[in-house]
Amino acid sequence: MTPPLLLTDRPRRNRKSSAVRSLVCETTLTPNDLIAPHFIVAGKNVRSPIKSLPGIYRLSIDLLLGQAELLLEAGIRALALFPVIDPALKDPEGCEALNPSGLLQEATRSLKKRFPELCLIADVALDAYTTHGHDGLVDESGEVLNDETVNRLCQMALIQAESGIDIVAPSDMMDGRVGAIRGALDERGFQQTSILAYTAKYASAFYGPYRDALGSHPSGDKKGYQMDPANSREAEREVALDMSEGADILMVKPALPYLDVIAKIRPLTPLPIAAYQVSGEYAMLMAAAQNGWLDSKRALLESLLCIKRAGADMVFSYGALEVARALC
Image (cartoon, rainbow, N blue to C red):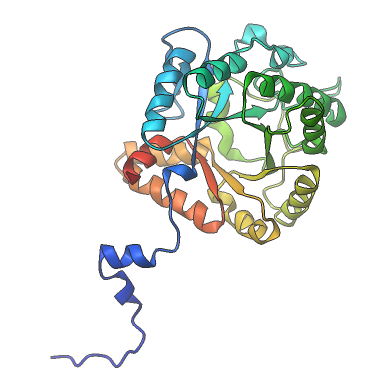
């Protein structure tokens, strides 16, 4: 018989059973940590599949109400809403974004009437509403205009707040928009409407399925306003700016390819940090699962735990419902 090694430090003792592993677990994930993004379409009884996002659908408001009930039953209390705008309503200025009776506002009012306990988050950017697919107003040369766009975003945020949105989430990456939106909301009496700033949103290749879902593909790239994937120190600057301008929550997007950025900014702010497991991240996992190459449930759980371990307090994920049910 081989004599035992003379080891005083045996890390495996803390892994020997499920009960022990639970006691020493460093990172936890609960349904309270999850935000479920949903795509909304006009009409009734519409459940339109998104080919590049397996298992995800564009839903009309009546079906979204049923989905919200399932989310609440699973312990998820936060939804992020993304309207899919009829191309006939799009124009270069994104005027439909300022329609008080628009699709997003109608969905917000319906959800709040039925489920007042829900936290609703709305995207503040023009890409879903413009014919050119950019997040802001564009001049004749194709340049995205910063200050003019910020003015439009303030109007957009006010309309969303008036409809009952709890958290406005400027995702456009225009300079100064957080402070301008905060000022506009406060001036109109919406001091309790929170701002979730997309603080470090990168010009990523992982957004493709999302753009398919919205039917919004930009004319040209977004590198002039979204961050360079090569940069992380730049995120520190954006954190300082968004904090000084009144953000309530900071966002890193995408999540898994930028875990280092989440970890880097965690010590820099007392504010909650959100991370977005974007469409491309989710689609890769689901495509691999469909081919039998991995277990989708385990892979989703592991990926979200990694995001939390890096320092995120909350995670946007298209797999939120599946994960919440697995955690129950």
